[in-house]
Amino acid sequence: MINCIITDDEPLAREGLAQYVTDIDFLNLQGIAENPLETMAIMQDKPVDLLFLDIQMPKLNGLDFLKSLDHPPLVIITTAYPSFALEGYQLDVLDYLVKPITFQRFLKACFKAKKQFELMHGKSDQRNNPPASSANKEHFFIKCDGKIERIRFDELLYVESMQNYVSLQTERGKFTTLLTLKNTLAELPPHSFMQIHKSFIINLEKVQTLGDGHIKIKDKLIPISRSRLTEVTKRILGDDLIN
Image (tube, rainbow, N blue to C red):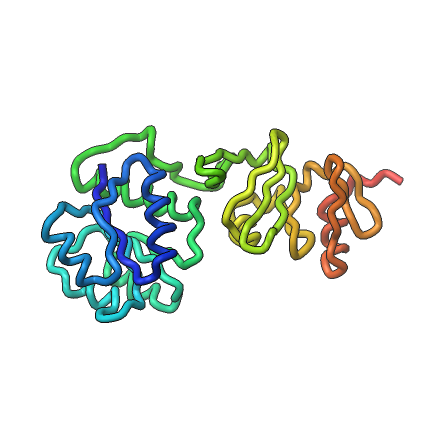
């Protein structure tokens, strides 16, 4: 079990990260802090292996706090500011997560921490280590209705943006999760999936009909942006049109 602390001055960020932590069985949340001074107090009382650390906070900057530690734990940066990434990695942080942080991205960082923790403590559990390469991935995970759902690429029909959420329509039903369309697209294999509209990503292999400005998957008519119509048509048809 990896003992961890969340340090962030934003209440919603703390709440979201705490929920992520409770959904991962190899993490044990030792405390939640609003600033590095509270973090230091927790670290003096409890064992801490991993720190989820924000950067821009009152009283003390997260990176300055990290520099002040003689023997820092493993650290994963969680911030809204990507400009600090280089300095963070120079301080040997394990990972650098830019808000809004998806559960899939958070889980990937935690697996990295787990692997490093096991190396440091002479442990290894190959069953729980992530694959060495994402090239052969066949699925990803989302958080939906308080559960973690495995979404296989070959069952995913299309993804629809719903402001701060996305709806993933699969062969076995619809799943809604707090995720952006851009972040969802980054998790999907580009040879099979394509964004064809500001609000839609489709599985190219599931297209049944290509119409005038739209495609059809199952009973769903999905619009194609004018600027992407030529590319979409080429990706769908390839060299398969016979008349």
